[in-house]
Image (cartoon, rainbow, N blue to C red; front, side, top):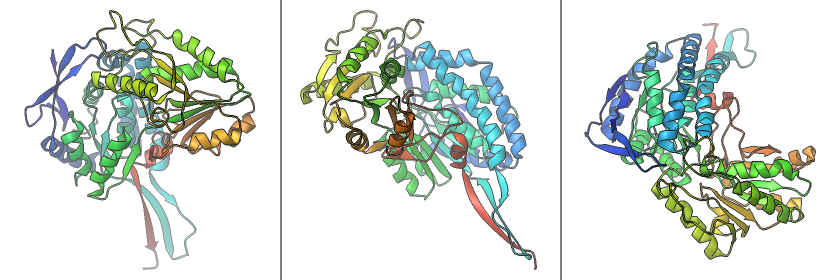
Length: 484
C-alpha cells in the first residue's frame, strides 16, 4: 500500500496533524494507499508558499512564463501513459475515457501559454488629449485557489494552466475520492526547475476543513470551484468573508431536444453516449431527453438498443465502455434515484433487474437504467442524478412547448438540439437559457479554446478560451497627465 504526500512549497510533506485517509480502487474496492488529511494549518503553509512565489513568478515576462508552460506540456505528453493508468486506477474509468481526459492536460498548458501573450500587459483605451495618456493593464490577481471535482480530476490542469499563464501562483485542493491524478501532475511539475517553489501547491483532504479554510483564507485572492450546487453556495459564502472573486462551474439538468425532423441515425448514438460516457458522471451530460411525439416511440426503441450494446465491466478491459461509479456512496445515490423514479410513476423500461454477477459484484458498478414518460415536475426530471440513468420526458408537440420545457429548470449549463434545419436549430439555440448549446452534436463542447460555463444555478464565469484566462486577471485603468 502506497503512502502519498502533499506538495507544498516545492516539497513533499505530510499533513501537520499527521492524520491520513485512504483511497480505494472503485473497480475492485481494494485500498490503493493513504494520503495526508490536510486542514487549516496546511492551508496556511501553502498560502505562505504561494505568496512568497508570487513576486518571482509574476515578475517574469509573459514570454518567459509561456516558454515554461510549453515545457510543462512536453513533459506531460512524455508521461501520458502514467496519467491514463493513474486515472483508471483511482477513478475507475475505462482506458479510452481516461485517455480522452489525459490528452486534454497538455492542451490546457499549450493553449494558455500562447493565449496569455495576447491578453496580458497594456493596451490603449481611447485617444487621449495632447497632455494626457490613458491605458488599461491586465494584471494577475495573486494567489488563486482551485477546488476540483472528482468526476474529471484532470480538470485540475485547466485551473493551474490559466493561473500560471496569467502570472498567478496557486493552491489546488483535489477531490478526496480521487486525489492521485493531481499528485501525478504535481510529480511532473516538481521536475520543472524553472517553476518557483510554491508556484503550485497541492493539498489533499476533505472539503471540511481544508476546502473551507482555503476558500475563506485572507491570503487567497480568488477561488475557482467546480462541483455541486450546494458546495458552490458554501464556497461563495466563505469567499465573501474576504470579498474575493469566485468562479463557479456547478451542475446541470441538461436538455437533449429531438425535433420532428431530426436524423435519428445521428442523434441516438450521441444520446446513448451522453448518459453512459464516464458512467454519466459529467456535469454536461444529458439530464432530460425531450423527443417530439412523432419520433418518440422510434427514438425509445433505438435508444434501448444502443444502451444494450454498452459493455459494463473492468476498466482495464479494452472492450469495456462503462466502468463503475466513483464510490459506494455515489452508487447508493444513483440507485436511490432509480427507486424514486419508480415511486413517482415513471416507466422503467430498462434496468429493472439491478443484480450484478461476478466479477461485477465487487466494485461500485451500476447497471444503466432508462425511464420514459418522466414528469416535468418530478424529482427524477428536475434533480441532477450524475449517473447512468436516462430520463426520457413526456413527448412534446411543438417548438414553443419544448423551449419552455427546456428552460423550466434552475440550471443552465448545456443543451442539445437535433434538427435537419440548421437555421431552425440556431433560432431555438438563441432562446435556450444555457451557457453551452449545441445544434446537431453531442451534449458537451469542451476544449481549451472554447469557453465553458453555465447560467443560473449552474454557476458563473468561464473556463477555457481567452475568457477563461481573463477570470484569473484584474483590469486596471491608468491615466497619466504628461503636462506635469
